[in-house]
Image (cartoon, rainbow, N blue to C red):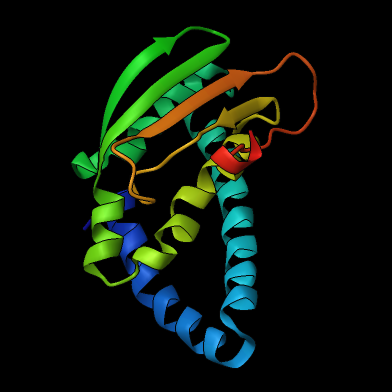
Length: 168
């Protein structure tokens, strides 16, 4: 039987079923804040590597290639995306349905969904292209009606950082 890539949604579910109980155990031993901090750091590093891998997979790291790379996020109708603007310097879209958030809630892991999924986005884009900057002020995971993704390809080589509502 040939190797078949599983969808990202299924991959995240498998990960959550392992990381969730590990987080709970670490939180009991180390405290919730420290356990979350450790997991978030690991997730960010995995996301950076995933961004590098995605750029290689699609054959480039400009915004047009990034737009193609995000198609994997949508497999299994995992995301409903409304594109607002797309050119060579800017990609703006809203996610109006997120099955990742639905899955974390169904698993009883809504409190970790932001760390395990949403927290990847800035680091993933940084790995894809260090000049790719994400600004996002809200997520469905946090209870908003939609996630507002605003990507910019910066002119300088300063590292990309994800900004949240509290950082703006």
